Image (cartoon, rainbow, N blue to C red; front, side, top):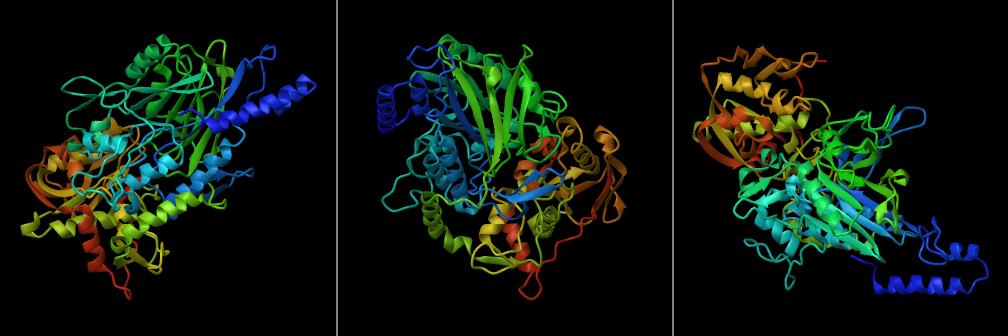
Length: 601
């Protein structure tokens, strides 16, 4: 991970030439930016050196610019209005990072997890090999694992790290073997149940010219609650704070005093604008969520926290246990932003001068030059994907928002739930009476504007896959009316109380959500009706949902209590079948009304 010999030689040449100049002032001027002497080095190495830390998180295999509202970042203007800026795509991310590195001889690039998983077809179809290849090309130095790195299990994660062709599908390109990630994936808080040993490396040390920075990577302890059971089989997930503190002590003993934690867990800033000041009125006042308590518990030995998971943008200082401010950052998602943090490294103490840490998020705009190597990579994989990706599945009359909708009930959520109910209602397919869809499983919007040559309004297989990339198998189970009511209450209570997860429901299920109340009371029990009739607590209902929800995922323990299970087609197959059955070029699918959940604010 150190610089190439050529770069070092060039630096030495500059310094040798500079040494012949008459004044010390000229010597400083000729030195690379960021290497200016801030100490009392008498012609020796400067006492401090500025290390540039570039970071991003939650890329989710978005190699091409994300479409629709999911591809925008919000920016607050000087007059207080908010502007949407189209952003993201690895061709632009590569250019942004390469431009940012110019003039910074000490630059390290790190990521906060979920680089792969829930990816659009271009990457997902090839088990995310294209994304790992792109990250190698972006010169990523290190990343933490996120929960989505476990979607296909520990063996597949090991393959992404170490290389080798897919065990079932083999090699995708003739004569080419997948090389794996040339950066370490860190998983300090994930151990194997059998041996108790870490699944992957817990930390790595980045070194250059005697400067050493340790990186510890963890994913959220709650990963098993949000990944299918198969994905986390044989693994244990441990407390983030205890794990980081343990390895920070180990690094400290080894003489590594500068430490950055990469944490796949995050927070919610009070504003969704990337340029919001979340240290207003005071340090860290503008951010809430799990990362705040984690940050407050992590040893002061750690100098900065790169976070993720919530897909939010923030640059905050949250006080460490000794009361000192410490930088906590997150760069939205899908490669739409990157964070540029300056860490001033003191060669004498080998530590970061915390008082001078500076950080800001920058938009990965689409009006800059594209990185040609990334364009070539995208074109190469697109050629392989094209026969499958470009097949039309149906037609829509306008955008149908899913990921891009901030409302509890999303138009695309209704379409997906209706597709699941319709596909599983026949007696021989499970006899479903109602269907539930988890909001986090809707990964994109259905966008009316053409993404390729298919024409406006056409939904291709690639676009449908981008909305539902997990290919979860559908389940139909027996649940009592009482369990149904409990499941709906679990949307806003228990582990979901702080940030509710509102299930998308099929047509016929209606109820009132009163957000002025707290906890389970927010779901008004006596308003829950199916096809106009109150839910009978003693009656058994046939309920359709994906295998993730049927396993009690996302805090829905009641949904995990289902019996008499029938396994049906995949969520994606049902979605595509519904598009085919309900739309033609002449009569496209119209975005549905969102009138199933009555919200009281």
